Length: 89
Image 1 (cartoon, rainbow, N blue to C red):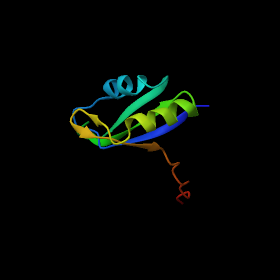
Image 2: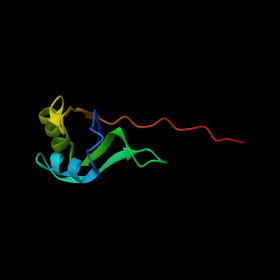
Image 3: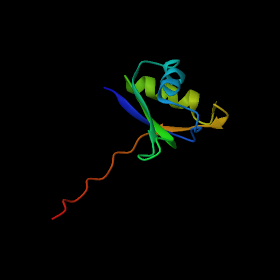
Image 4: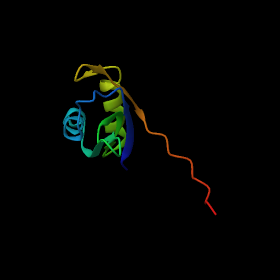
């Protein structure tokens, strides 16, 4: 089962392809996305990587948390699920 990771501390120069390649060293990457501002398309400094298995996700966390990418120190951990929003009436 795939495991989604939160990746914080990204450089504004890091894109989704760079993020995917960096994490692919430690296992199969299902998806990688750098979150961007809606209007300017500028990076918001964080993203998400989905690893193919829990074991690969744990390896990626162990190897990449507090390591450098594009001159910035990464924070890597398991992504927390968003709370459900109550419907608006």
